[in-house]
Amino acid sequence: MSDASINASTPREDEAGFGDYFALLKPRVMSLVVFTAFVGLMAAPVGVHPVIGFCAVLFIAIGGGASGALNMWWDADIDQVMKRTKARPIPAGKVEAGEALSLGLALSGLSVIMLALATNVFAGAFLAFTIFFYVVVYTMWLKRATPQNIVIGGAAGAFPPVIGWIAATGTMSVEPWLMFALTFMWTPPHFWALALFMRSDYDDAGVPMLTVTHGRRATRVHILVYTVLLAILAVGTAFSGIGGPIYLAVASVMNGLFLLGAWKIFRRNEDDSEVDDFKAERSFFKLSLLYLFLHFGAILVEASLKPYGLGGW
Amino acid sequence: MALKKEHDLHKRRFGRNMGVGLLLGSFVVLVLALTMVKVTSSGFQFPQTQGTQD
Image (cartoon, rainbow over all chains, first blue to last red; front, side):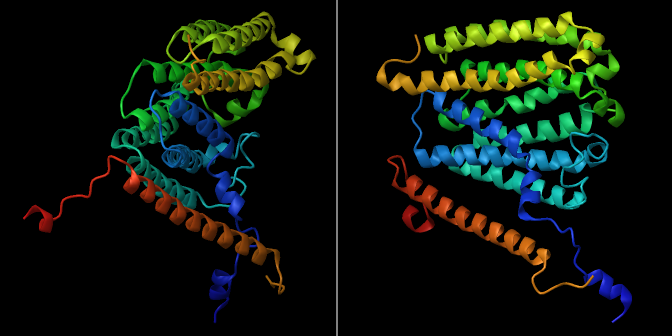
């Protein structure tokens, strides 16, 4: 046996564990997908068998995870530059980029076919479109080409409640698109706040984030404008088929707080932010997580109360 | 690289294999449950075969 063959058969000491492959699926993003898809499914005016509902949410989540793995495969070069992402399995050297590609493609196919079989072909096709949109349109094409990357990427993250609704009904209507719009409009202020306090990351990676291309002042203005538009949309949704008094109460409080947070960010300059280590930007980012969770939670509560004649108007 | 009898690598591989095994087992159970639900639902019809067409 030659030395070369010994080396070839020697296992790597830092071989990936099960958790490293799971991390490729971006579990935190997946949890958002699971929750919003579940709300989309529950808010639909059609009863779904629990096993079918469980399968629908599971396969939508796997589809979302597959997109995450494909995103990590494509973005491995910039992930190793950014502080926030350099511990991911590929830049950390635990998983090969090719493995992420294989896992992503296999799970994409599995999730689309299984969702179509478990629910309907329309839902499966829409999941396939979502994966395509996130991986090809956002990750490969626009993320490194335009400062509006976050706006476009937000669309991909906003599709799950629509898929959940289609899985239940087999048709499309206005309500799931209101849930889509809620996540779509929420994503830019959420990420731009992050970009304000994760300052050098996007510069170093050469990703044309708004903070890099248009400056930090313009980013603060954008956060405020998007938050105002989001507040109008979020409160307006209260008067649709998925809204109701509980949702209206939640939306009123949360949008008041969110607008206040955006106003604070708008009023500050870089010196103010440096002094308290971006306190306002950090709390706005944290609040944004609660904001989306509570809005979808309120839609879920309204939908759950409807069978008892309580939810909605 | 000399491997001890119980190297960390073995544990990691065992965990990985166990994870994949459990996932595959769960998938089989899930497909079985889904099939049962579909077959016992009121709208279920057996697909037409050559024999039943004649």
